[in-house]
Length: 151
Image (cartoon, rainbow, N blue to C red; front, side, top):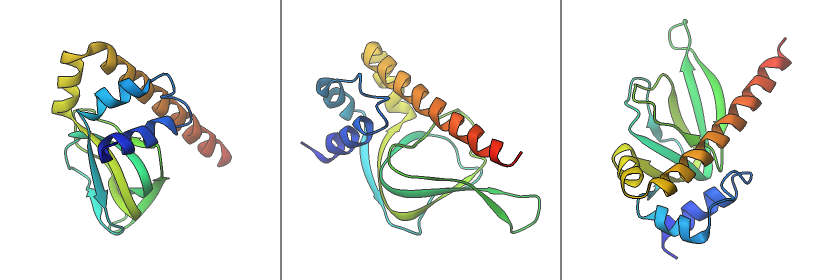
């Protein structure tokens, strides 16, 4: 099993079951559109105002997401994500900064490869998007739960 396929399989199969509807064959087919990237701790994945040009699934490691506050030089940690989390494309610029806290392995699909996947295999593209939507829904629900603690 090549590294991209192994990383993708690990990430998607262990992501709280939201990708459990994908077969091993689906994941093999998807791996042609993904690349694997290892990033050492302390490195910045992206900065505020960088473009959203890829989707990243965290296979291992932890990534901290920070947002600038109104106070110069002050940032607020809005989340620390580990295995299974993903960063979404939305055709705009990033409003947060992401730094790697622990050495991380990411499975990445670029906007270009996502478009290619959807054009060449729409059924598989829909499965990927379905899993991503479920993942984002879970993350949003957890965010609401965290906010409710403050009120």
